[in-house]
Length: 394
Ligand code: LMR
Image (cartoon, rainbow, N blue to C red; front, side, top):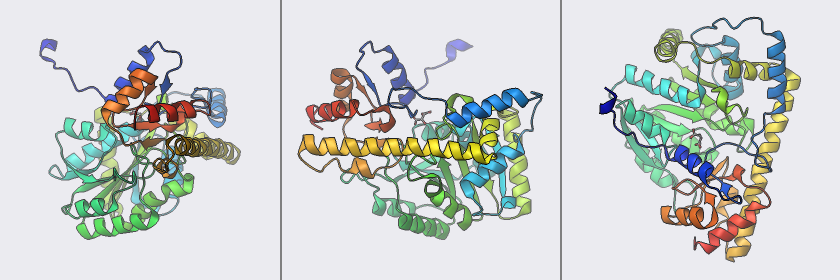
C-alpha cells in the first residue's frame, strides 16, 4: 500500500528550518521560522510560564481527561483576552485545539460541513499553511490583493476591489494583526471599511490571530478582531498561544465560533466538540493550563504582560535599527517601510534569486518570498544583514 504514496509538497518554512540546521557556517543568521529569539539567539521559557508550570506540577492531582472542548476555564480566559467583552460570552462557542494550526484546521472543517461550496478568500500572500490545508480538504479558495510591492504597505485599493467580488456566504480569512508574511497591516480606518464591505456582501469573516501582543500591544493588536466580533452575526476566530506565551511545542490554540443566538451557538459548540473527537479526541491540556494559570492570577498575568511588552519593544527597536542602518548604507529612504511594519515579520520585497544569494553568499536564511523574522536579529547582526542586502543589490 505504501508504494502508492506520492511525495507531498514540502512546507517552505519548515524546509528552510532544516536547511539552516544543516548549514555548518558558524556566522549564519536564521530569519526563517516564526519563533521568537532573544539577543543571544535563545527562545526562552517566559518567567510566568515557568512559575505556572511549577504550580501545576505541585498542585495537579490528576491527568484524567478534561472535556472534548478542553477546560472551560481556558476558553473563558482566552475569550476575555482576545475579545474583552466586544461580544457577549454567551454568543461564543469555543474549543481548545492543538495550536493555531489545529484551530484553523477545525474552522475549515466546520465550514466544509456547514457550507461545502463556500469559497475561502485568502490574502495574497498569506501564511502558506492556509492554502495548503484548504487544498488538502478539497475546498474552494480565491485570493485578494494585499501587499503593495512598491510601498511595501497594504494595497488597500486592490484589497477592496477584490473583496467586492466576494459572494454571499463566502468566508474571508483575515490576519487579526501582525500579518504573516508581510508585516503590513490595515489602519483602524481601513478595518472599518473592510468590515462595512464584508457586511454588505454577506460574507463571514474568519480571523487568524497568532501574534497578539507582538505588534502595537495586547489591546491594540486585538482591536480589529474585537471590531469584527461585534459587527457580524457569525465569525470564526482561530487563536494561537504559541508566540505570545512562547509555548510553541505545547500546541495551545483556541477556535471560537461566534453565533447569532443561543441555538446557533449550541449547534456550533456541539459540532466543534464532534470535530475534536473525530480528529484527536481531547485537545492537549498542559499549555492551556499554563495559559489559564497565568491569565487568572493578577501577579502572574502582570509579569507575563511585562515580559511580552519587553519582547515587543525589543522587536520594534530592531526594526528601527535595521531601517536606520539601511538608510545609511543605501543612502536612501527606500527601506523605511521596515519600521512601519508590525509583528515578527517583514517582507523585504525582493526576488527568490536574491534571497538565495543572501543564503548562499552570506549565510542569511529568510523565506523565499523574502519574509524575514525580525526576532532572529540582534544589535550585532543588524549591520551585517544591511550590508548583505546592499551587496546583493536589493
Ligand atoms: C511561521 O509562519 O513561521 C510560524 O507560524 C511557524 C509555522 O508553523 O509555519
